[in-house]
Image (cartoon, rainbow, N blue to C red; front, side, top):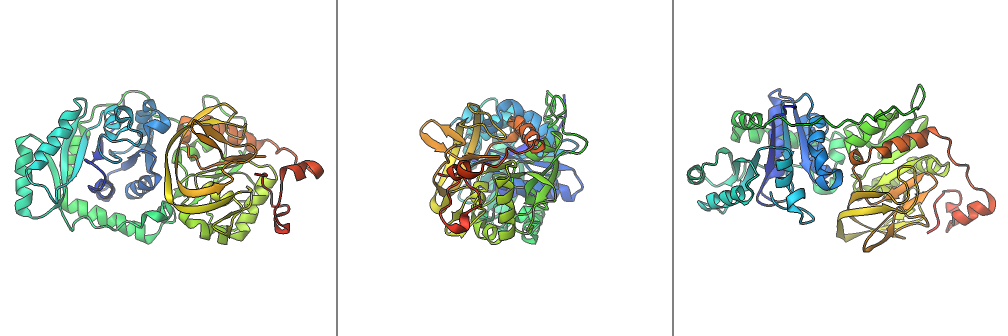
Length: 480
């Protein structure tokens, strides 16, 4: 049994301010010298990145659909090891889920699995005594839920606050803080920038987190919140570990695996990097915007799913690195790309030349494709075997033509096969969580150690690569 003080911060619905409050709470407590850890319910790596920036250690996602309910507590124990508080930020409303499976995939379900008290953030700008009915309803809806109290956001005045506190006191619900309408400013960088401001260590992101921390310090009773967090019971089981059951024979010095990211981390889940290291890899960060060459001795490349689609112009402009990535793929070295990482490997996106590893063209549109997929691997690759089932998440605006190559990566009911498997490349817009599939890292490292398959020549190569212009000859790419 392991004791980890913890809180789940949720809300009646999106838009109540729980994201800013969760970031501010972590920043405020970290500023007091407390070791803290931040987690995000669901697949959102952007929110997780800002939680990590506030906490001073990697933010992590807790997604029951991607990793399984049984891994939630072990992953929290792992990510919060050595801390005095874990803050879990919910997604959408307390009882909502992207798939409608509220009994297993909502924030309430995660809080119950973690045996954690919930603090409800409520926007009360247009509310009076009705706040008591609202909160009582959320408390009574699920008898297994532990609703520990509320934080009031967008309070109009001292009189308004007194009225709200009195109404909540009548139903026995503690109030841990009250923020006025101007107390929680919209200071975080625009969502279109994704995780880039955090990974790059941008001053705008750091200042925003500090400002939110100051707001929470001035308006929230931190000591009472810590008291609630400390009342959470011990969690059974062992922390999740990236270490494989038996060591992978990689020799005295493991292969160098370049993971795309920046000074503040990678574009993938932090557990993927931990798994690669545990499998024996020497992980080196590759900044796709600043680095013009691959790290010396690179044997494999991993591009995580949080690389923003809005940065295709910057990716395209780094032509030297694009050429280096194409050459790595052409020689048969393992290259794994998820989400928008696939766009970087395409021939072009919205007319901008990319790496040219895949003979595919991308077009960014207004509509958003979002949802989970239970995907079946259609081809053997460096990380999966044909027929294996993997649960992943899609969230993208870009449409690819073609959607998949001659050897597609995945298929699922109701959708055409998508993604590309070619030589050592496995690329798809589907984003998985490697903590649920540790074999991905083990297989990738094993493939990085092995010698690549010889490049086809003559007629064999001509059958596999079909350039559409003289400039593309030798740039590599599977025929669509």
